[in-house]
Image 1 (spheres, one colour):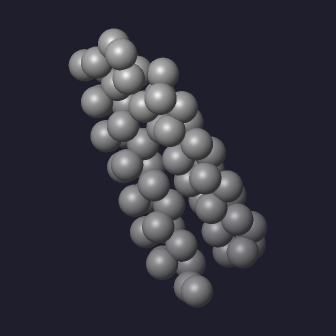
Image 2 (image 1 turned 60 degrees about the horizontal axis):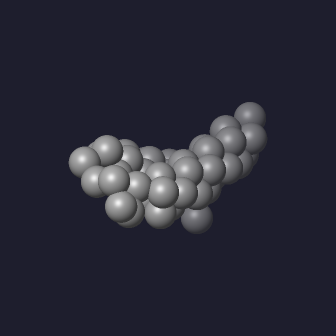
Length: 57
């Protein structure tokens, strides 16, 4: 898998996390679940981005 594809996948994860946080912001009952999901997605994106950077060096 090339770097561009990995970065696109990471970007997609970040976008999904942002969307989850926006949904959570407007809700109180499901906020914990939505925020937890967003955190997991951001952590996955962070890992993928760091991995891509290491591969580019």
